[in-house]
Length: 310
Image 1: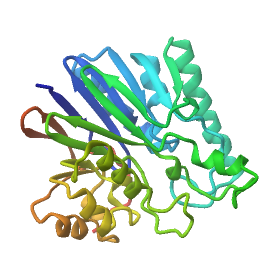
Image 2 (image 1 turned 135 degrees about the vertical axis):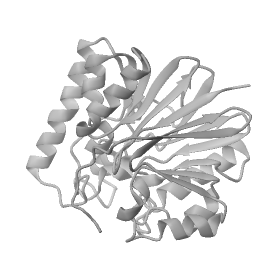
Image 3 (image 1 turned 90 degrees about the horizontal axis):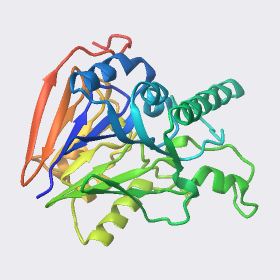
Image 4 (image 1 turned 180 degrees about the vertical axis):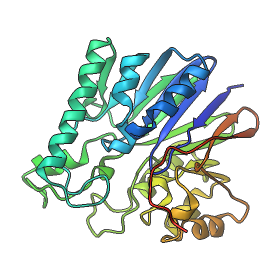
């Protein structure tokens, strides 16, 4: 029987997820840069020195922010990411992009690559692999990666595309989705995968497309553990998506008080009235999957700096 523990660290509007199996460790995203003291303490408290791999799901600083420091401070065997081309139509905060923003993103991108090279980390650009069916082995588990092509670059360089040579979209549209099956349990790590209702076929309802691909491949009809797309906000968890996923457990890397502009909780509870929703404000979670699902919560101070919202 397989055993997997997932560490969802205490981050808000940011993802830093650690996979653990038989003393092997791996990251799915690395959190915003200001979370590094907390992340480093977590790793050091567990005496983690070697990390099998880091996956950067997309190039936004709330997902790659600590990557260069982890590469410098720990023995990371492999780094998986897509190439960054600076085609952001809007920033990670949703504002219109500009040259200064893109220049800074390129600076961070090259810093990550330089640190990986300096520390002998193998770099794999997943969007340059020939297959669309990309799997990463982790101990005795298999991670299925979805949406591995570089959508923004593909549209930008394609003369037949309506968006040829146009910087129109957000890097969230380039985001990976990750699926794991552990024993009888289905797990989907949604990073910032979008559920846009746009009429543009290339970007419409990407999360729904992913889930349907997973269901068809594995002949399943639900996700037991769902790491909410896009921190629970931005209209990502539409009712059709929530009903399609029908989750038992949802981890939202956010605080509930910042989600009142969206029907996230209502949609999840309408899809499954018994759903357990875990938010990462002032707490981190260890979810251990064996022949059952066991959740441990650990309270700790938050490093998130924001205006008070009463």
